[in-house]
Structure formats: structure tokens, C-alpha cells
Image (tube, rainbow over all chains, first blue to last red; front, side, top):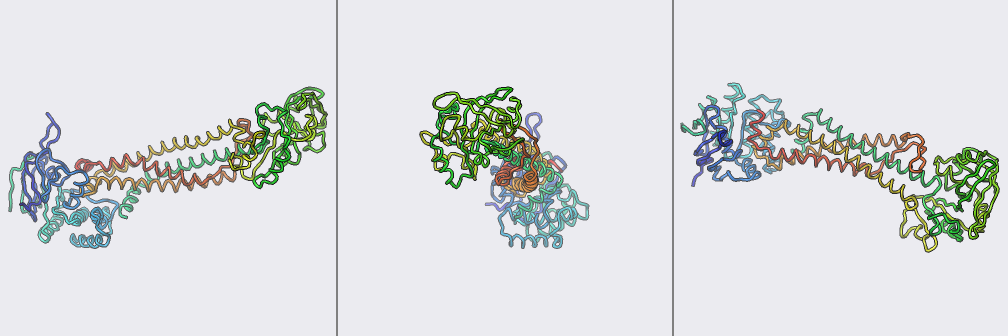
Length: 229
Length: 405
């Protein structure tokens, strides 16, 4: 019996066929335990984002098994996998994470609305999440009235709001200046330490690597080094 | 509620595009409302012209009379029918007529036509004969005759001139003649009537035909024209038996009724064309809106938005677009329709299928234009949005996330 948040077994993801076949992910078997602050690193085209999409249920593997909290997500239908992502996975992308016509509060509320949480409970949790990421006073602002770092914090708050098992972050600091990036990472690290939230990053940002408790090195679609600190 | 808010805000992300789309759909709706209002107005004018010029909204004849206007097929008991009509509250006016073919001779020429023997008083309330007189006066003296302008020209006669009517007597077929003095020249504006009919007193017509009582036709006007449609429990049915038949204007003028019926399809055709064009605009607008938001949809799906949720969002946006368009279209349609209902659309004098149209055509606004047509618009916009909505629902998050960054 395992309590791993993520477990992949010989996962492969190929694109194209014949002479144009690209092996984006090749025979990757990894296990992510609860509370880890993991960075998947490697050069561009090494397959780190593809692996992140596979473990996040955004893409289906060509072969192999992807288990999230003990559930094989490889063969789920469109609605099933949507529900699974909504309830078990939080996402933070590189940029443009938020729905531009909704305020910060409404962006956070949106995911709870999808979960069917009642209005008062939603609004209370929105305030809690905004407080968690230090944006209590900016809840009514729309994304275009927030800085890049503030937008990413709202994205983290939204990811946390659904009580996920894990937060997957794809190059979350890529569009931020150094200072803002550090501030965002400090928030995420704090959530990791205080709430035991599991984070997995796809990145080549040194700041993330230095804070990560585990580094998974990828090259040409394969894991070449797995280092726990 | 958040979905509604999201849909409404999404709609006004690109205000110019939304306004243009609303204008496109709304103007199509206004155009359809106006088209239908004009057609209804035209039909009303045609029916009024057809029924109130001379023929009435219904007529009672002896069975078989209208087949070939046989003068022997008159109704000897017409007085009892008149009595029935007199006591029926749905009847606004009626007029008894003796109709026969004959020859009209002047000192210079001879013409053939229908001689209408009419009750001057009854006829004044039923037809436009009195109003159609352009020279002279209405029937007064017993030997007065009213002649259409073209026939007067043919016979080369003027007011006060004498004409002789020659025709066969009923029952015997013997030739009979009578002298009349031209009291008035009329012009209905319908060439068929103006060229072929003369009017004399009904008593004179009976005398020439050698019948003491009865008539060939009783024309009827109702307070409500719908009473003219044959109803098994209505007046016309009660007047129809083995010897007489009472027919509404539709049954008497089958060709024209069919033509008017076809005008209903005109709205349908215009609506289909307008809505087809509008639906292309809707699809285009919705797709542009979706393509601009593909990355956003990718993120939305990644965080757990179901395909159906996205489908529903696009459909709600389409619903708001349709509602805004309907409000605009109904307002413009109602304002223009009301203005033309008061002032009419000037078409000049013309004749369509033997029906004189001398007046401006006032548009007729009806409830179905403001209930059914907007409902069709909403249905159309929602149908047109199905394809874009399905497209949005089927967006693959990984493709979308790679696409727009």
C-alpha cells in the first residue's frame, strides 16, 4: 500500500510517427511523496513540461501508468478527468493564469463554484486564500490591475482553494523579475512547510532549484538523475 | 450566478464586435417585423378593397348562379333572407341585387356588360358605389343609370344623355328594352368593374327581367370580417341549403385568397434569408471570440472546468447576445412599424389581380411579431452558437496552452 501523491510507471509519450516520431517522455518511473517540493529540471525540449502535463492529467501517455493519489488517470473520460483535476490537482502556469474579466476574488471562487461549494463557504475560503498569499486588500481587482507577481499569487491561491493533493507549476517564475519571483517562491515554500502542500515544478530557474527538496533531472525525455536533499 | 456574470462580461470584452453583431441580428429582426407588418397591411388593404368596393364580405346566391350567371337562377324568397340578415347582430350591412347581362346602346355606340339592379339605400351602406361617382349624382330617379368612365367613353355619352338597355327576360327569354338617363359616371379604379358594369334601380331591373320579386345576389358586410369564413355554426352555414348558397369572400375569390395565403410564406422566405445571413454573423463573431480566448479556455479546462461547463458558458453568452439583439430589434421594429402604421407606405394607385389599391398601405403590427419572431431569433442564435460552443468544449488543454503564449 503506497501513499504516494504521484506514481508513474514506465510512462512514455511519443508525438508523430515514422521518421517524425518524437519521444518526448521515455520510460519515466517516478514517485512523489506528500509534502515534497520537487523541481523537474532540464534543458528545453527535455520533456519536463510534457511530464508535468502527463502527471496533471492534461495529456494521455502513449504507454505506461500514471497514478495520482492511488488512482490511474490514464483512461479517464473527458468529464471524469476534468473532475479529478478540479478536486485533486492545482495548476499554476507561466502566465495568463487568470480569467481576465473576473476579479481576483472571483477567479479564486470560480474553481469552488465548479466544485459545487455553497456561496458563504466559498466567500469565506476566498478570503482565507487571499490572506494566505498576502493579497487581502486586492481581492476586488481584475488581473489587469494586478502586477505579474500578484497575478501569480492569485493563481497559487486559486490552486490552493480546491484543497488539492498537489500543485503542479509550469515555469511559474519565467515571466517575473527576480525579486517578484523570489517573493512568489517564498509564498509557495511557506505553503509547503506550513500546510504540507506538495509542489512539483517544471523549471530551469535557479531560484526554484535552490529551494527544492528534490531535483529530477531530465534529458531527451528520460530521467537521468533524481536527487533528494 | 458567476457563470452569468462571466458570460455577460465576456460578451463585452470586445464591445465593438458585440455591438456590430447585435446590430446585425437586431436589424434582421426589425426588417422581419417590418416586412411582416407591411404584408399584413397589404393583405388588409387588399381584403378591404376586394370586399368593400362592391362584392361584400359574403354573398348569398341561388345554387349554381355563379357558374354562368344564369338570370333564371334568382332567389324568389330573397325578402326572407334579408329579414334574417336584418335581425342578425353580426351583419353590418347587406344589399340585394338583380344581375343580368345585357346590351347598352347610346346614340353613337353599343356596348355589352352586366346590369346591376341595386337598392340605392342598401348599396350606399355596402359598397363604394356612391363614393366612386366622379361626375353627376347617385341613383335618385327611377330611370337613372350609373355608368363607368371607360364605358361612358366607349358609348360617347355624358351626363344627362339617354341610353337603352336591351336584355332577355327571365323565364321566357323574350327581349326587353328600357330607356335610362345617365345620372352619374363612376370610377372604382378597377378596370374590370369600370368597363363592364352599369347600375340601375333594382325595381327597374326586375321590371326588365319580368320578375316581380327576388334577387340574384345578396351581398353582406359583417362587423367582423372573420364572420365571413364559413363556420358550421355560423350565419353563412344557416343560409346554405339545397337552393341557396352563402359563401365568404375567400370562397368567392379562390385565386385571390390563394394569392393572399401565399403572402404568408413571403415573411417566411424573407425571415429565412435574413436569419441565414445573421446566423453566419453569429458563428463568425462567436468563433472570433473563442479564438481570442483559446489559451484561457486551456487554463480553464486544466483547472477542472468540464467540457459541458465551457459549452454552457458559450451558450449563455449566445443567449445574452440574442436577448440584446431582440431588445434592439423589437424596439426599432416597433418604432418604425408604429410610424408607418400611422403614416402608411405610399405606393400610389395600382391594381393587383383586379383589386384597386389607391391608398397608402399602413403597416399592421401584431403580437406574433413581438413574441414569435424574437423567439425564432433566440432559437437561431442558440442554434448558430452550438458549433462554436462544441468547438470550445472540445479544446484540448495541452494544445491550447501551447498555442497562444
